[in-house]
Length: 258
Length: 222
Image 1 (tube, rainbow over the protein chains, first blue to last red):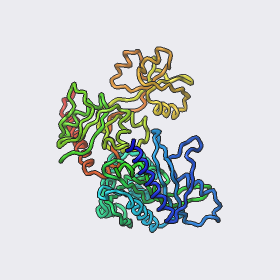
Image 2: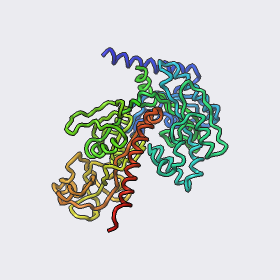
Image 3: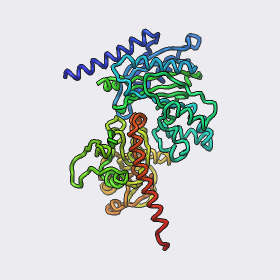
């Protein structure tokens, strides 16, 4: 029992550490409902955007730095403790870098071996551009992206084998060189993180609101993501809200801390 | 190279038919014919192997218990997006899902359908805008039309022998299925080992496809 209590204690320490850092960095907590419209919450981002989108536009000072905490439920009826961090109304590449750097700062506060961490980046914008040049029409390109989002990696090998290399994790310089062969004028963001980095266009993010860079922070030994995130665009009450953010999975952090 | 990753494989026909590909990939087959072991750790010569129920394979891979899984397309479709990557059709354990009944006739009006695949059956009838009542069963589906439980069943068909033995016939084919290699996204994207295991299995599958093509080219014209 001591071990169980100790593990729970550590998870709450991690939680408190993250929340203190967020408050000190000017983020505002936003409560979202864990159960609504006969559905358990599966995503904080959309829930937060719904809540904040209910305010009159003139009362909002963009960009908003916000966070939400609490369990996320999965289709298999399990759940994960999560903290979701968002920059809403922030539309620049500089914010993308700032978000990734802030994630690095947060993770730097945990007892983790950095050589075991791998940050994988994908990009929905470039994926769209690439597929628009290769797929027969827009509908086909959308179907390919939907298939990737459902985990059907094999569609690339079946449909676009010449591009397969871009759909495997590549180091930054190889990725830049490879994507440059197919699409002109792409400026691949060089992100300074303390972890190994890979670029892989098969990473699309779980949700269809992702519109630009997406990323997952993995630990090599656990087979779990410690964090997922990316740039998104959502339509709320006739308004388009853009932003970037990420979700930290506290159970995964506890597991890799041992 | 010492292997570090493990593959979870659905017991039964998928496991039986994987053996040939496993050996073609250059790995010694660890499962003894009458053995009861269900777990074989990774070794110097081969990835590890976990033998489990097909229904559980996506969960084992999604949670990182196994880096890879081998499971039927039917189960992947039934489970829906389950947080795994579907990376390779292994071309083994071919079968199909079918709607079957005592007579080969499409149901007339609302009907009760017994199945182990409620999600696939629901989608199939919804696409055809045909009202049904689903009865979820875990086995012995062939009995359902005979004992008054449901006049139609949606079930997996390999040779059709089981249907014939129970005086049932196929009404229509719903989907084809074969065994797929699935991968845990984190292991897939962070381990060089994962790429090596995939490439070895891909080569084994391709060599099988080449052999089949060669056989068909060299077979005498009848």
